Image (cartoon, rainbow, N blue to C red; front, side, top):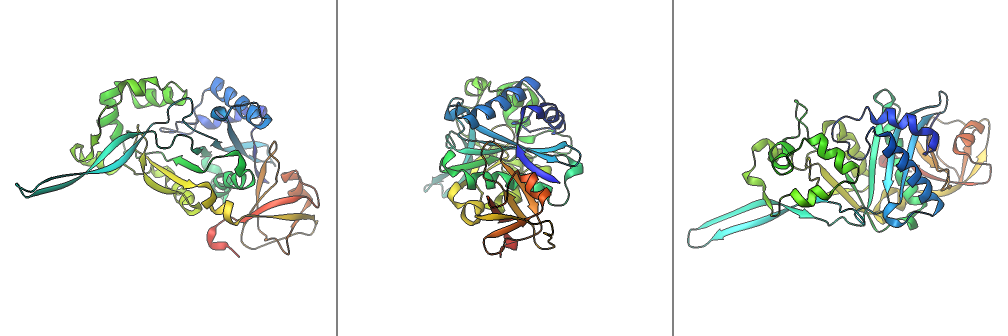
Length: 343
């Protein structure tokens, strides 16, 4: 059975293996064993109540319980930018006009921004290509929304998600090539590595001091601003279905879009509900898929089931109850996997 669960120390090797498959632009999940070890410890301290808000975060893994293999990962940060600046560009507009010359021009500018400081962040989403079947990708991504719905008091008012930006067929970021590289004088991967490891002082020291005129950039660079990496387009569509929107903020390295939302407006927060478990060996289902999560902070778990709750009860087989680490009579949170399948 496929289950998404809270990360454990024993998952380190599996996480390191997964991180090695992510490719370019995955800033928040790198194949760095010491950094992954520190992150797992940070998650443990968050759950134990020993981490300050600026350090709090959560990480979840997708496990095939039949084989014991970890095939995916996703994360949540509680509040970004409280100790290390959370930089991005805000896409704005400026108008130049001369009545005497009868000239009026409207141009897009990129302004350095800290607007998203204090936001929660959806991050570190990756699923092995071979596991991208049977709704696993939607389960992995949406499991975080079930956590937000269960524990909204642990987060602020707003949330964001940085999408990987556009890379061309040669594997390069046009935006980095014609903007970032001129200021930072290092390669994209090197800048990405430093940022991922919290070494961000170079950004403040070297980044453009004044707004960047988008209209002065090459056409392929202009087209890349706010454009999602081809491998990330399904993830963007899923997040937009949950209530996030592009609000004109982009990543400072590859100009990928940043999606935003009020946490209270997320579909899972508005529409998920608690029902009680009935353990039934004969439980079956062929209908629409439902997300089902337990209510445990330390051992949060989410599975996907082909049956809807009935009369504020959900029937689970013994194996399903075990996968959720839940007993008869205990509550679970439920939500249709896809918005169109709401009942």
